[in-house]
Image (cartoon, rainbow, N blue to C red):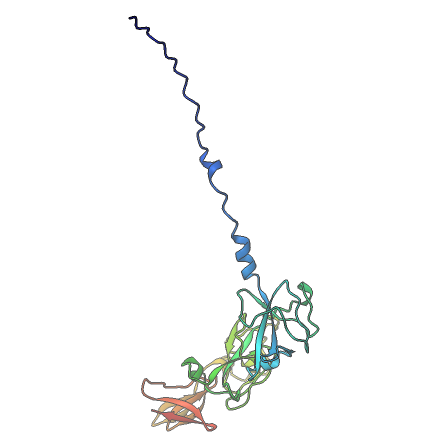
Length: 269
């Protein structure tokens, strides 16, 4: 019996393609555009909360009962005053807010950006009567900041604030002096960019010793030879300054403070 040795043929190994790590990676989705769309901004209008009929902005600015803010995306058509708002939301989106004229409309032609500076005063929300800043600083219930345009009028302590808004502005907001008046003048630290450079007035009778002392603090009242009030203090109680020119209270303490109650200052401990 003969054994025949068989010849075996070996085929060359198949070529394997090397994966290209760059080509094989999935292309990430561009999430920047969607984020930009979310933060692009929105229109805001004021509506009757029950009927969604658009009304003027004043009831919402003054936080009157029954009025509510209603929001549209920038690409939407804004409802005209007197018509029912649709396809919007009571939930405020992200981004910059724009208002729209009473006729409504869509696009950049109707976008109103309100970025003027404001003067802020602390008021009782129900009446908008101005009170001491400490109530808003302390976050007391029933009180809130009311923002008045820099070209408006600021009420004095105990007076009612008008033509402003409880809505926090996008621009700078300045504290106001207690006596109120023209907002640009009442704003503490505000410098009118359009105001002319101050010039020295003729007829100065200070004998050259000092300059005009309007911006300098000086004593106006003493008790037992001690100064208890300055030109910045406008009201004292038992020798203690309780009201200042800028509306802030003097000599605060952890146990006692001065409050505006029933149209006069009272020290409460």
